Image 1 (cartoon, protein in one colour):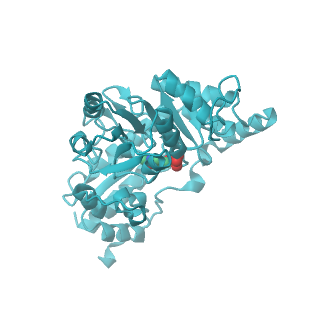
Image 2 (cartoon, helix red, strand yellow):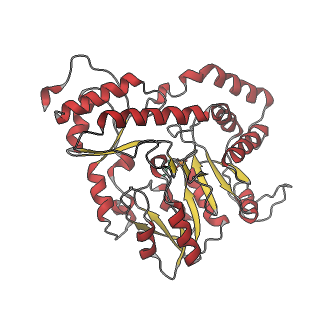
Length: 376
Ligand SMILES: *Cc1c(COP(=O)(O)O)cnc(C)c1O
């Protein structure tokens, strides 16, 4: 396996943080200068305009810029009325942030296995429902929407609320409707490496429920209502006005970002779908019910660790999501669950470079290296 590297190696980093904003540096700097010149830092016009743009894009009544998606999930659960001890069912294939939000909101996170589509499986959710279950937290991992029809039916049947972790899925759709807009509330992340990223931390919570919106408004801003009166205990978890301005600039061309990401996913699929050692994500257009935004291109691979080393030796960066462990496998957190599909998945999963800096040549080069590794 050692000698299959080529002489013409290329550098394809998994994600190049230093280059992430290079293409728009000049307009970004202009936006930052403008915000500074107006002294507009907290809860100003840029935040309101960005929230309005997101709300209009997603077709929701209320959108709140928040400090990050983890806070957003925490506040969404509290705004939706979570009580101490309430069980919240979530898929273990997610970032620890999803159950951490449940924990800090006073709930009990209950992990379930993933289904064949690697997302939360309504059948397994139903089996995990107890008399204490109050919420389902679907996670639209990798920018692919969960089965919101199945989950919605369950929620209605058992009287549960849905809080969506759409941190990876801004713009993803299920049956024409945007991920994050199905439940009581949905939450998006603007971490720099997310499909829409800012120059630090940021997030958004959306809801169509006026009561939840009123509580969110207070929770994120010291308990203050729209008139500035302190109505309850609150947190400080606002999206910086500067970050909102930075996000709004990029959001204007967001559709083209989604298009490009889907193009890259299609290119990977075209040139790898005949490799029997791999399981690939569903390609664009393969499911009429779904529009994926490909936050990540996560494959399953035989000899995953050897493949990863081989690619590294050829200059191709990859990543194993969540540091290589599902949430229930993090021993410090004390989950007792055994989730066989997720556990097998974590011995095989690997993410290939897919972002706006990846070129068609990068994909060709990466694919060629993978094919050399498997001698295909
Ligand atoms: C990134 C991410 C989060 C956390 O988002 P932050 O904005 O960094 O708090 C939560 N859930 C999922 C699925 C994520 O990918």
